[in-house]
Amino acid sequence: MAADISAITKYSELVASNSKLRTEIWNQSVIGDARERNAFKDFIGGEGSGKPIVEKRDLAKGGSEKVTFTTVAPVRGQGVLGESELKTNVRKINFGTFDVTVDLIRHAVSWTQVLQLLRFTGKTIDQLSSEIMAEWYGRKEQDDCQIVLRNTALANGANVVYVSNRANEAALLSTDVLSTTTIEQSKQSLISNGASPLGLDKGPMGSDVPKFLFFAPDQFIRPLRSTGTYLQSLRDAGVRGDQNSLFSGKYAMWDNNIVFPHNVVIDTADGRQGSPLQPIAYLGTAIASSAATVITGGGKAYPAGDGDYFAYFPGFSWKTYDAESVATDTATKYLMIYEVSGANKGKYEIVSYLQSGVHSSGKQITVTRDSFATPTFAGNITAKAASRMVQAFSSGAVIMPCTIGGVILGYGLHLGAEALYYAKGSIEVERIMHWDDFKTESGDRAHLQAVGVQGVRGFAAYKDTIGRYPNFQLVIGAASIPGISPEPKTS
Image (cartoon, rainbow, N blue to C red; front, side, top):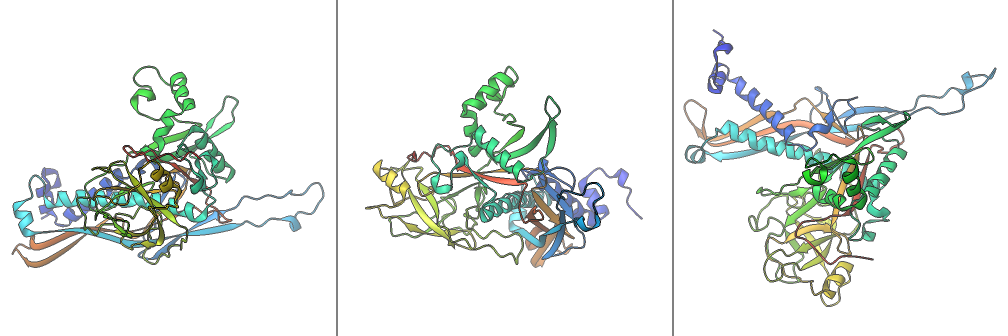
């Protein structure tokens, strides 16, 4: 006899009435919680929604299969006039396609029976595993969105805008922080490349004013609040009182661009920290001298860990499907190691690395150290002149991408509609389990248990009929990191 659902008031009674409901409830809980933990949650929608990220599900697709999207080019030409023949002047419809490859992604956490019996308090295994897996799945979804767009722009080049219109990263100065001028220039680049706006507002005479989204870590956006033009607009055009953005900490729209700061939190996980748009790592094993060429991550908490500490750093082979071929990058990149404690607090060193030097797991990077006696990296020359260059660092020192001149790098994404396509396959989120060793007679507990999550999904930037990525720009400039203040590069 079927259970009377209307009479059930407890979760335990619900799953007892139908054992399959436990898995279904767990799956739906992870789906909902994971999306809420994604900073892009308000910017994801279906086709035609006008959102920056387009989500589409194809239930027929499994691992390492492609979901194909079709694009159509506009038509030009003069047409014909009067009695002129048309049939020999007809234009063909120009189609283009781009693929999003979906693949199976899985992750899990495990525990022993002793831990379950003696240490769990307040939450059940179902609750705790659901929360942990939702956080991981949501964080991975958020990271994939940012990295696919960032790496596409870095590989393509045409989608990169440097603050102050600099020619490249090496030319950036410490003063090249985000400004209203950069937002306006980036918007013009989007419009000229044919970006689809998030919406159109109307000017006083009915002209269209396209709307876009500027998304970046708060450390990258924060200098905007010190820009005279921006501050003046908040004083003159903003609301009066404590709701004004000057006091509330909110960011007002600029040139019809939504300015969205992503508050990046450093947590206690044994793995990558920061964000793909503001990578940061903490030195694991202390560096005693200039002889060391391998730097490890993990900080003081995990000095010998195997986490993906450098996964956000440019050059790491981040994949969204197993057979993906990451483009070879031969450019030299730079890191700043900055001491944050002890006698050498505030001192630092610039080191270089290549893509080939980034460990496949992300746990370490092989670097080239500069000469302390006669440094050649501009940032080290400046640091030594100020007596701030050192080559010994304690565990926990901060590591950040920078330029050869010692300018800490930050990134922002300027997005129009349909900048990124997010394809889902036959499985969205599904609970997976593993049991090992002896189980209880009822079968609901084993000595070693593991619970995880799996899904089929993929990501790709929208590509038009001539191979451009029109709907986004990557803005690169100097970042302002609290507590980190190297000698400024001024020329």
